Image 1: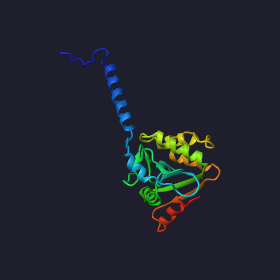
Image 2: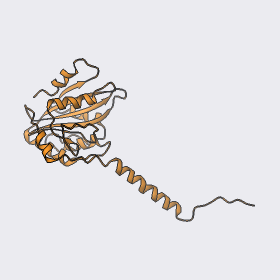
Image 3: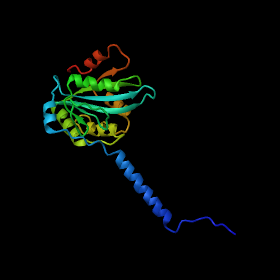
Image 4: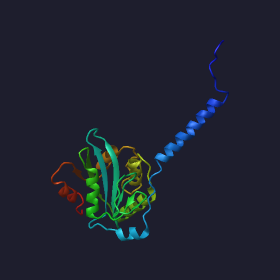
Length: 214
């Protein structure tokens, strides 16, 4: 008796391949869907905060101490109000209501909470501050509000797309890597840099220094 190997009927392999492609696409879309959080109007209005000093942008890069590479990018925009654009971020606080990755109510205490959340034994935080004209800060605020929710692993890319759309920052190139965006931002004229590390007995003081009005 001869045992013949089973063969898929003609076209079955192509059909199976198509099914796998559809499933893979669905998984990818699911991974990049973002959280889609939308805080109520009353919460956002109550939390709005304008930081004293000149309008500015603060690029935040969370650096991995082991690899020396960036693991996350965020952007603080300080204009008519100060907000945190935390694309695909995991941070949440009930006193900083979120709308599609934009957190309102970034008062000094809330800024410190965010910095401490990321600055730990495994990571240090690099804060780069750049003073900008009021109209640039307002455009950055609007672009951040229109951008989210951002999919996983798109944090640096989404932030770079916002920055390069601002007058005077057109030379910023779109990148997927937080440490690359940090290096590009460092080449802009007038950037001030603060590095926050853990453990540091003066961490609170350094966090306060990193947000002192320009």
